[in-house]
Image 1 (cartoon, rainbow, N blue to C red):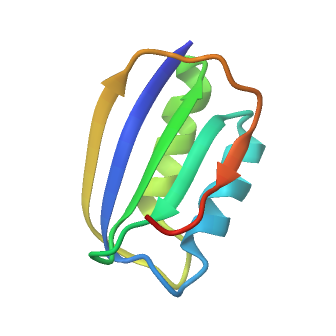
Image 2: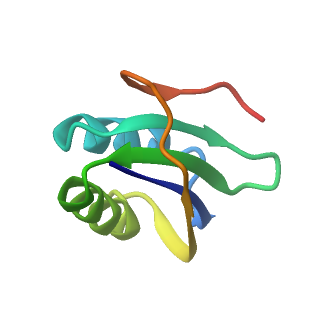
Image 3: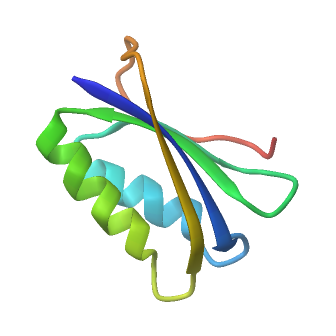
Length: 91
């Protein structure tokens, strides 16, 4: 089990990006959360088996059809006990 913190800059708010991330997490059995940040970025934590996380990250890095990714930060974290992926309220 692996977990990553991801921060994404670009056109990622007001374009359904958090819902795209949550749907993608569901496809790959990823747990964690996603939320908008005050500065216009989106941040998330994602956890799953390495193969699923790799596929999830690749798809999220491409974005949905309305988003445009400029920067994509990725940092490893220690796994935690959780059961689902959540869309969180603003910062």
